[in-house]
Length: 204
Image (tube, rainbow, N blue to C red; front, side):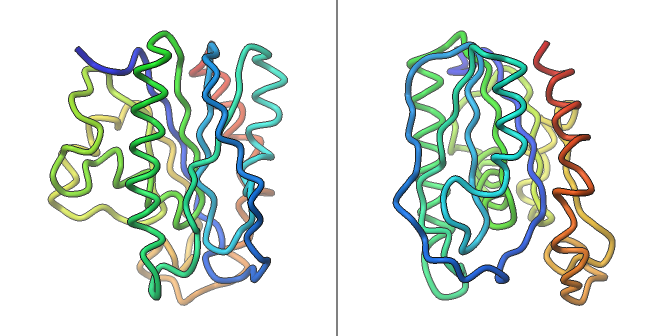
């Protein structure tokens, strides 16, 4: 039996190395069962709660019986730390435990930048298809970075419920990119309204 009644996720590409704000221990680890539960995995160097709160807030207004939690991980520069691996381990544990405790809840995953990589690999199985166990319901998922070929089959299980945003020439997610900062910073103005509308349509 799947641990999920329904899993929904959306991930957006946003800055990885442009914000040097000190990380603040303000994460929300809400585990209270709700009709809809949002998990957010923030981007590199962003403090809690992360940039996607601008999507979560209007969704919580539209669906009052919902709540959210942060994926707890360092979100430091992944080239010089194990931040990403902590994110995958902690995120998988948080998501699985919530789903087991609240089997009727709809779960929404949102991630920026490194956070999207974390969620993408959690859903795709980290290469071994085993992180979240047996999921009988397809999910919505996306990542800022292309998945390794070993992970594509697992990740494609969620294709009918995926929204993935990658701006042209954004060096984080577009192979043609050259680190275009404008493209990398434009996601809130470009896609917040669209992402909220899409998620509302999926959650009704």
